[in-house]
Picture 1 (cartoon, rainbow, N blue to C red):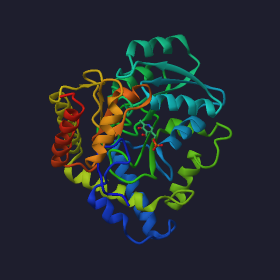
Picture 2: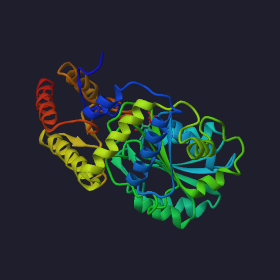
Picture 3: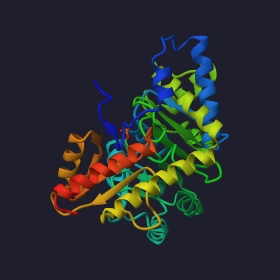
Picture 4: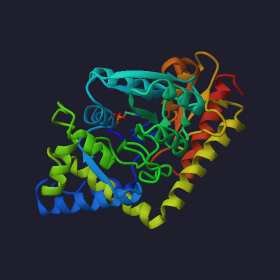
Length: 363
Ligand SMILES: Cc1ncc(COP(=O)(O)O)c(C=O)c1O
């Protein structure tokens, strides 16, 4: 099972060989000395990686669980959250807000567009009751990277909490949690860090932890204060963590530290540029607005009905791309460029894509 196709997916992505190797180690108890050392070292590495001196926590969950955690721990019951939506995952955040009994105010942009600063300011001017603003750093459904430091700067002028979905950006582009004054930022393991699914982690501001003290019914599974207590007292998590994924994360963070963060992000930038150039050379257009193209996924536009065919025909040739999403399902396909992908994989993927487009009489 597994391992037959070369992955250009939106996640789970292909894992780095050293991750797969360490993950096949024998298990140990999550209350053992070995685990405590692994846990605390990984947290320290993450603090360095996310540039924060505040709190970093690990969760046995996928990324969506931490959308829920941000709302349940830091927004008052019935409180208002401004949800910026540039695609499917912004829409999901709004549903999470509402299903947890808070009010979502949706600020929606067209597919391919980032959050517009002026529109953001005008909503914040109009409604002083907003407690928090959510931002999808990188929208995986449209292949758009928001200008997070700039948006965070605006939101902080209004003194609102900032929650960031960094699921498909973290690991591929710089994040400066403290300097950008973010309050809650989360990601999952199966994206740009190239680790199997099952682990999520978050950076949490001191302000969120103070607010959480006063929020009733934070729930149990994602109660941030419970996680903080367990981390301080037991050097672990309240429930059983995905130990193999944490070992994988530990290995990846050390690998990135050795290469240097700047060089690592440059690798991602160059890889994305190569993909976009390949798409352009085939005469295809990409969805993202110029200047906001994602470092991790490229949405390629096709005539109506062609996108799903490209996806199927590429699978027959041994490459798993990603299908178009939502309203663009029939007129796009996506090329993910996260995780373990070599230059040769990219060349061979484009050779096959050229053949597919020929067969479809698009070349
Ligand atoms: C931007 C973004 N947010 C949230 C999610 C949900 O993450 P998970 O599947 O880990 O819950 C995804 C998954 O693709 C995503 O791309």
